[in-house]
Every structure is written in structure tokens, then in C-alpha cells.
Image (cartoon, rainbow, N blue to C red; front, side, top):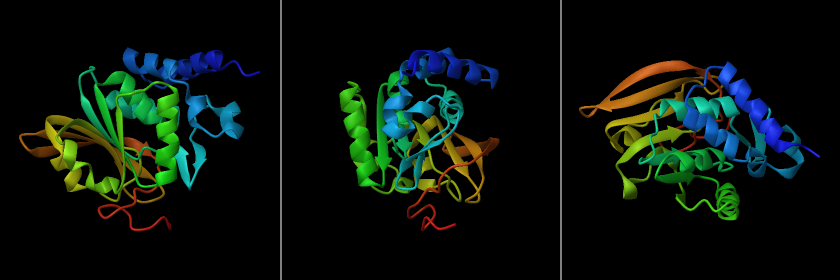
Amino acid sequence: MINYQLAREELIETLQRKGIKDKRVLDTIREVKRHLFIPPNMRGRAYEDSPLPIGKAQTISQPYMVAWMTELLHLKGKEKVLEIGTGSGYQAAILAHLCAKVFTVERISELAKEARERFEKQGIDNIVQKVGDGTLGWREFEPYDCIIVTAGAPSIPNKLINQLIDGGRMVIPTGPRRIQDLKLVVKHKGEPLITSEGGCIFVPLLGSDGWKSQEK
């Protein structure tokens, strides 16, 4: 029998060693059960600090990457956040504990359905989902305090920048398909101020303002 609670504590120690400092982020990762967001046959690896496959050529992100991207958003608790790429639902669940409302877009309907079932089973009720092209954002509920993109884009979609409030923050991996650079975008007086935070590897962001196909 796997002691998931002990495994989560060991993961928290790993994240702290790697430089994650935000106590709210660490406490949330300690609380949210990552093993419930992955296929049953992978649950023995749930608290490894590594990405894992979830089907449909998609992955659940490495916990360090989830923590790092979330920390960069500087969430205080009252924000409205847009997530591009629901995937397993794990990142959205983390965000739901740290902000007021999460709007999440997933292009693969099967993954969106599985994520919705996970949210319902865990009583997470501040997440709104949509199946569609995430590169277009979600104009119905704009503007957003923060945007997080959990797939690698060739460049930063202007439509997402436009859906940020002034002073809002967005984290997005951009660059070639094989390896990307994590960008932090802060909107200031209508203009994006962009900084590079470091290297990362994500599945490609597909859509009209992203990559056109899954092929490398």
C-alpha cells in the first residue's frame, strides 16, 4: 500500500530544495491529491517530480513546473484565472484552491470530461470548463487577472494578451517544439512586458494561433 501522504511530504521537500518558496503554493500541492488526476496504473509514480502520460499524447506536468508557474502568478485569493490546456485537471485544481474562479479550456473533449468528473468527485466547484481552441482564450469572461498556458506555443498569442487586465500576469512556454522558454508576461498600460524565466519542455499548443499539428 502506497503512503500517499508521506509521498506528498517528500515531494514538498523536493520542491523547496528546487527553490519554490510561496507557502500557499506549497500547502496547496500538499493538499491536492495528484494521484487522483492520473491513470490508475501510473499512481505508484504520482509523487515523482516528473511529468506522466495521461493519454491522447498529453501529459500531467512535472510538479515542480506546476509549482513554478503557479508561483509566478503571485495569486492572493481573489483572482479570476484563465487556464489554457485543462489536461488531467491537476493544474486547474491547484489554481482553484488559490484563487476565486478558474476558467479552463481544453481542445480534447475526452480529457475535459475526465477532468470534470475529477472536480465533481473532489467537490471543487469554482472551475468553469470549455472545450475549444485555447489559443483564442475565452472572450465571454474576459478580462482575467492571470492566464496560465500549459502547452508550448511558437509565440505568445495576442488574443491572450488582450484578455488580460492591465497589471495582469501570464505565464506561457514559447519556442521550438522540443524545448521552450517559460515567459512571464506582465501587462502594463496596455503593453506586454515580457521576461524569460528559464527552459522547459511541454507538449505543443495546437490551434489557430499555435502549432497546426501534433507532428514534430
